Image 1 (spheres, one colour):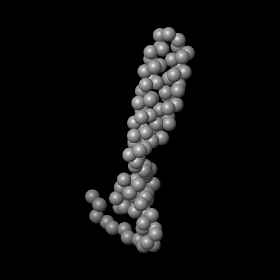
Image 2 (cartoon, rainbow, N blue to C red; image 1 turned 120 degrees about the vertical axis):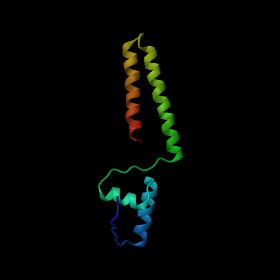
Image 3 (cartoon, rainbow, N blue to C red; image 1 turned 180 degrees about the vertical axis):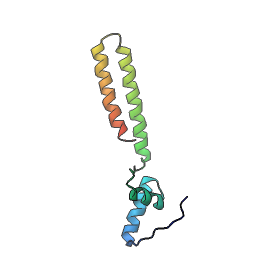
Length: 97
């Protein structure tokens, strides 16, 4: 239970910048400052456009995995190459999480 207050002074510009950073992280200012002050990792929220792109990349990733499975019994080298490509895509997708 939080029952203690910490106050500090900032300039008008600093206040605006902190409020904007909190908004981009999807947090209220208090939670944002607590997390920053406690060295917790913050992630900016994805815009609708970025979220749509992420969903498309997930679909592409799943498609490549499916293709790899189809080739599984035909040519193992081809399957491995396709899976390697899908794994690289997955690594890039993790950057969004």
